[in-house]
Length: 234
Ligand SMILES: *Cc1c(COP(=O)(O)O)cnc(C)c1O
Image (tube, rainbow, N blue to C red; front, side, top):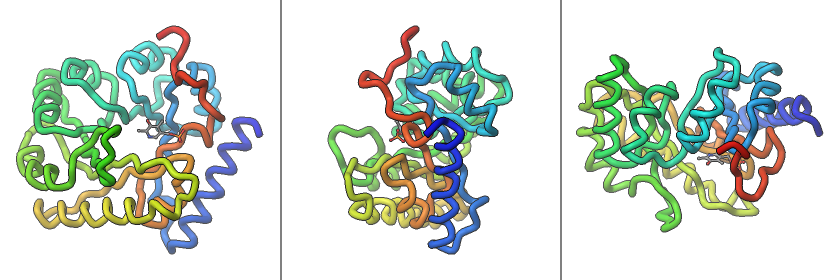
């Protein structure tokens, strides 16, 4: 399959998952994960109509974004160190991977200096995997009010990376827990949170059935990544 065929196939699968869950396909946004992909591949996908892209490293994003069409929109989806917050605020329209109050405070400070307000998602390590970043659900609930009180940061919802599995049906409970956690957060804040960013190449259909509003797909669109997942010029 070439890029266009993969994009069409992904869109078909998104529509089918929405139909099964009785959801409107316009409520699910496809984010193309372009980590490890050269600007040419990103530009090619953009030429097919894809607008939203995600990167997981600030350094890589910094070198690539300027080489891609300027109308593209970028989300930060990888772990962010506080010393990279300033650059991240400059490059991205949303940071999906806020996982501590300290990081949120730093982003708030940088956004203030840049005279911006930054939409963020709070990343949750639902399955409690040692290898993954993200809030433990209890910590998230404890810190939510403080994060939400930061004036230059807007909490738009939650994000998770589910454990890898060859049988996506098995991790349906992870997606369900994230959805339930979002409604707990909404109760605490007394306001709706629009986004649940969950679902990757191996599990996005189940994630959509469980309420995902953003699915983050890399290999389903671009093909398998090279082992190191890095770009040559990094
Ligand atoms: C790499 C990555 C993805 C996409 O992974 P694929 O399995 O290639 O679709 C999604 N989310 C995050 C945070 C990632 O790092």
